[in-house]
Amino acid sequence: MPTAARSDELLRFGPFELDLRRSELRRDGVLVALRPKPFALLVLFTSQAGRVLCKDELFARVWPGVVVSDDALTQCVHELRQALAPEGAAMIRTVPRRGYRFDAPPPAASQSAASPPAVSPPTRRQADRPLRSVARPLVALGASIAALLAVALAVVAFMRTPSGSSARPPLSIVVLPLTGDGDGRSDGWFAESLAADLTAELGRVAGTFVISRETAATYRSRTIDPRVVARELGVRYVVTGHVDRQDERVRLMLAMIDGDSGAQHFVDQIDFERGALAASLSEAARRLARSLSIGMHLASGHAAARLSPDQAGADDLAMQGFAIVFRGLTPENQSEATARFEAAVKRDAESIRGWGGLAAVAGAAGSLLWMPRDEALARLEEAGQRLQVLDQDNYYTYMTRSFQAFLQADWDTKLQTHREMVKRFPSHPYTHMGHALALAALGQFEQCIESARLATRLGPRDYSAAVYIHIAATCEFMRGEYAQAAQLARTAYGMNPSLPSPPVLLAAALALDGRPDEARAAVAEYLQHTPGYRAEHLGRFLRGRDARYLEGRDRAIAALRTVGMP
Image 1 (tube, rainbow, N blue to C red):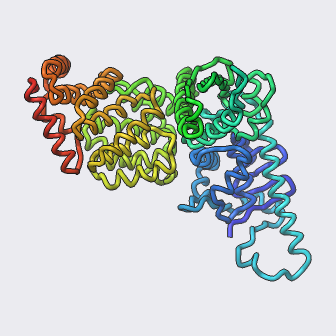
Image 2 (image 1 turned 30 degrees about the vertical axis):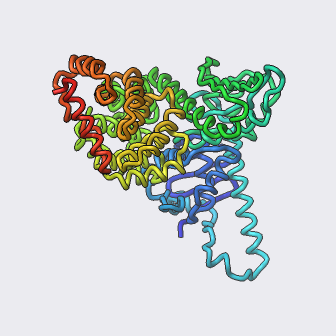
Image 3 (image 1 turned 60 degrees about the vertical axis):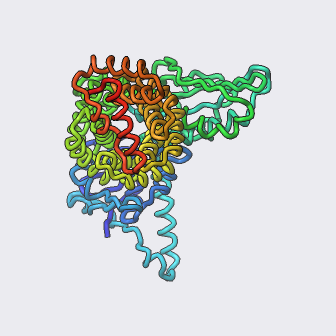
């Protein structure tokens, strides 16, 4: 049974000493740097040594009243393992599908002689035995009170931590209560419901620390500088919003404010018909959460880019990588971002965001043939193995599995993966884009178009938005709606000329829609930029299993040859 020796304010295990009064961790008397949340987690772990703590309990005890993603816990555990290294990996055990267990080593010999007798947490069998004396419940009560006080001390220490940006999680945010005016009939229930849904959706974003709606509500009817709010709550970004109703139209405007500089970043604006508010509420929250997520990644990446190489940690390097990815889906950006992600995992082999970034760029580059598919699969395999160990329920873990299935043409696995992702990560456009790709390959064209449209609505300004539209164009083509396919393919091509398929699909759709002159012009323009392209190359991108899909692909190739494509 793991044990830890404790006094009133000190807890010792192995070479470590946890000072609850000073909120400090020391190894052999030397202070170990530890941020507030990992410190609070360590206090909880040591007070419950030997017991499996499920995620729900850890969230409730370490992040009371705050909505955070699973990745926040994983990153916190990772920081704690680093602080306790090399012993940390053995102390903090991941219990698959259950949670974590802290196996405390006995105190070092030099400490144990001066320490009180070790106290071990009772096993379930011991706890179920009849009580034989009055002392036993008193000891248990005392241990429980000590544990609660320890966590409380850690939370107080967290709230008193200096609020410089280095002490705040990179993706930390609060959504303040929305304001409203206009004709005086703004829907208060709508503003409150949207703020609550937006807070919940942001909590699903991997690695995001989100202040709870109850805490945010304490700022209602208060005029306060957002920078003060950021300092008080320990977040980097503050979201403010305004709801305005004019007759049957409702307009929502949101802005994200940098908690350090006070600079305002416009995020999004959505107009609703009054009658569609209730039906549109959840989707609006998911769309806005996506916009805010991209805004946070960009802002954090740009801030990290100003750091020197010595200052930039793994998380900073990964943020720089995502900021580059979000510039646009191009081979150049993919290559530049890969270098940042590789540097991140080299600096920290357990960086979830670093491995997730490597999987994202490898999967996209392999899908678009900017990287040989065998090479992309090898990179995905390595990233997937790492992510599976670090957190099997993380968004990046599912995303990696999805890319692997696509490159291997394993459509059943891809469809199953995205059905689960729709449940777990409904606010992420890639969830619905991948779902659309699987549906298309299996011949379910109408459902594919619906999922692709949802991805577009959730991420209209995404770096991959042109891909969402192109998938819808492909399904329209497969079901013979050539005019609609041409329109969507033209839109996708205009949004991102770097994508190889939209201009080719556009030419095929124009040819079959009875517009051969336009189709020939499209082919001639494309061949000027890509002289080695051949009609059959389209088959490398239009990959599926359903007979109707394969027939549609062959139809597109034949149409291209009629309008001059070699």
